[in-house]
Length: 171
Image (cartoon, rainbow, N blue to C red; front, side, top):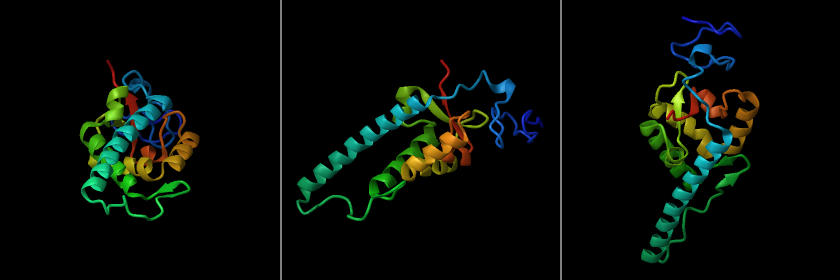
C-alpha cells in the first residue's frame, strides 16, 4: 500500500487524498476536480427551492382539503446551529436517497457536481445518510468547522466523517 508523503499514513487503495491529513495523492490529482464552495451553495439553494415549493404545494393542498390543517407540528424547529423540524427530516431523506442512489441531488445535477468517496467511486446509502446529517440538521456548524479544518479538500465536517468529497463531473 502507498503511504502519504506528508504524514506517513497508509493510504487506502485508489485514494485521492490522505484520510488523516488531507494531502492530495499526486497520481490521483488529474482525475478529481473538487467543486467550489459557491457551486455547492448554489446546488443546495436549488434543492431548497425545489423541496420548498413541493412542501408549499402539499401544505396548500392539505389546508384546502382539510381546513382545520394548521401546518407542520408546532415545536421549535430551529435552535442555534441545530434544526429538528419536519422539513429537516424531509431534506435528510431527499439527500440521502438522491445522493446514495445517484450520487447527486437535483441541485448537484444542474451544477454538474457529485458526491464521491475519497477514491472517486460512487457513494452508497449509508455514506449518503452520514453525509446528509450535517447538511440537513447541522449545516451552519457543519460548514464552519469543515471550512476551518479541511480547506484543501473543501469538506464539511460530515463529508470528512463519511469520507466523501464533492467533485465536478468530468466532461
